[in-house]
Amino acid sequence: MARKKRKILWYDLSANRHHLNAKAKVEEIVGKTDKANFDSIVLDVKNYTGFVAYPSDIAPHISGSHYDGYEEEGYDLIANVLEAAKPKGLEVHINVNTFSEGNNLYKNGPAFEHPEWQTVYYQGIRVAKSASGEIVDIDGINQAPVEDSLSLFTNLDSLDDLKDTRVCVIDDGVVTDNYDDWPEEMEEKEGRVWLVAKGSKADWLISYGNAGERLDVSGTRPAFKPAAEVEHETHSTFVNPIRTDVQDYELSIIKEILTRYEVDGIVLDRARYSDQFADFSVLSKKTFEQFIGQTVEHWPQDVFEIYYDGSERKIRKGVHYKKWVEWRAGNIQSYFKRVEKLVHERGPELNFSTYVGSWYPLYFSEGVNWGSVTYKPSFHWASADYHTTGYAETLDFLMTGNYFPEVTREEALEIQNPDWHSVEGSADMALEAVNGATPLIGSLFLKQYKGDPEQFRKAVEAVLSKTDGVMLFDLIYLEEYEWWAKVSEWFHDLVG
Image (cartoon, rainbow, N blue to C red; front, top):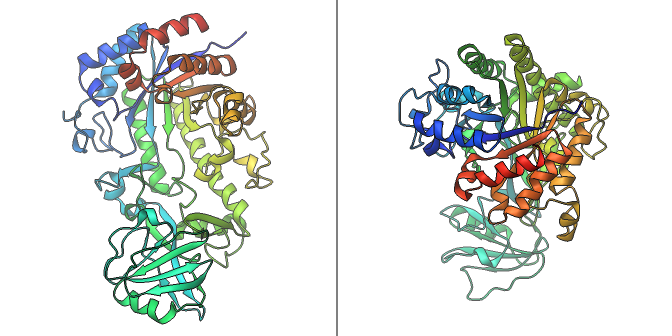
């Protein structure tokens, strides 16, 4: 007997705050959700900031965050959605953002109350190295130097007012010209960069930046910084997933929700490392050494080394690289096992699920293997035992973000992308990785189809035909684009 196709709508906490911050508004939105033939809601109640939208005894309430729209102290979004959804037969699955616990822009959230939790990033500080081995830090890339600093420019488009600076022109690692001040005219060419300095670092350039001398600007030195000191576009302040106190904190929030509310399941988001440059803390080094049974002699270079090719940051894999990738994925798998145990002990009928990006060949960099333990990937980063870190078997269903404007493989190939850079191709890849271990729900990012409802319909049809359902991200776009009626019609036609 064929499984029923799930039709899930995600309610993002911050994006929809002006639609979800009052009981009457919630009733209206839930009514629209029901009328559009969805059967389930993923309700985001703890977002990347670590603040929650229910009166918790553990986590800070969102009324104390920077979000306007959630000013009501103790506002209970979970209770309001459940009260509106349950009479309509809509399932409510609670989303908990996991290993992001703060906002780096506003410097608030639990990660700032517990700075020891913060993940430690490996950063390759770019350096200039003279022919004689003298090294100095490069303080900025494509930005004007301040006093006693050195900047590297890789193109003329980024140049600003650079008066009163010392300038070195470097072609393929050799100084070709140097100036006491920025010249009137400059010419770009392949392999050319410029070092621009003020103050004491200008003196360094005078000493080591003579024409004809080698001056290497591709090297780096390792530096380790907590999340609060690292800039990220998302402003997420990640914490270290292997800390026992971090995991216990996250589990306590899930337990609190399951104890207080009659929900249908728990969803995890950001249950991962932030990126490939985390976590390089002392704890991670020690624990990794225990995992491989030996000391890492050159840290972190024996894992990987950061270097630069022009303006592009790259990594050079070390002898322990594949085991490091395996170890990180195993850490996340261990946490998923703890959550699965907690959820199903509270109620065997409860669902445990997660959202991940569908781009499996790249997702290893977040320290996650969402595939089955039976799937053995052959990618360059995968060790012989990497498959043992899969966590698909812990889940009641898995939502993969098939976030590509191109629906068919042919559309992806037409713009010279790999064929899996499409809704169809990424769904097939995800199905292969999951290998039947759990139902797979193809997920779509509505903003990618703005102004093109026909392409959106094709995407909905594609995931419904290939996977066990569809999740639409996010509610806000159904409102903005006025697509409620369209979705209702498509669900009726495609699923019945």
